[in-house]
Image (cartoon, rainbow, N blue to C red; front, side, top):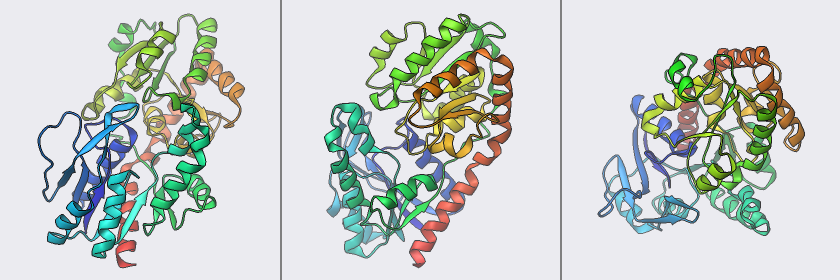
Length: 378
């Protein structure tokens, strides 16, 4: 199979979409498929866009509020020219920007089938940027984009059904995985814990995410405040970068901020997860949430909401704790319980690590491959 994968973001950029796509590309190439990644020139790249059998780059512009990321400019004619010379069997559009729309239109001209994935709940971000009025407008735009492809893939059945109810056609599901060779309990580093100032039995609470408004840091602050009052020996680590970087360092002056960890250094990220004991995940805007399953694989006791990856993988009270999506008080209660009950915290963390073989990437790659081949043979 020859696949053209179109995306606005790709490593070394740091986010869940880039990580997921890099795993898919490497997995498909290992199985002998030819994958061409179509993406914007990244912030650190200079010069003119280039084209090869493995990559087509196009001009892009910074995304508002996310200056380290770019969206690709419309490139329909450039893609038609490239794909006429060497046509792919299928085009997969991973992001819904101008570049993705250009790819859909170019593929239509050439008679190439297209599929897409729904990676990001952009419509639900609106209320976090004082633009709640735009929610339905953004959702309509996303639906219009995706319904031009032969199928749209979501990471969970719950989200696929929700989108189908909003008029998205031909929904399918393929999940997300974790690199278990990297993310596991063996990555724990007692020396790192000492540098954090954590005593042997003190709980270290970690949070890994893009530092942005839609991640619900107000609730995280409340949880951390409760924990600090009941467990003065607790330590807090917040890994990531983003628009709220400076604000969060003011709001959480007691926390340790290692910054963002590059995707090519996943071992260092795993070392941070595994050296902590609990992971609090207050976000309510995820399509999946890769960081939650990475944390579980590293033996963290997880507290999250009952949707996306926590809703799919956490058995409440067995390998983590989840609260109803609208029940912030339960989230705070669970967070405090995880921090103050040492026995429960260890039991849940060990159970989460024992559950982690279900996160293996290979079945995920196989599922994605199968959907593409079914679409090609349509």
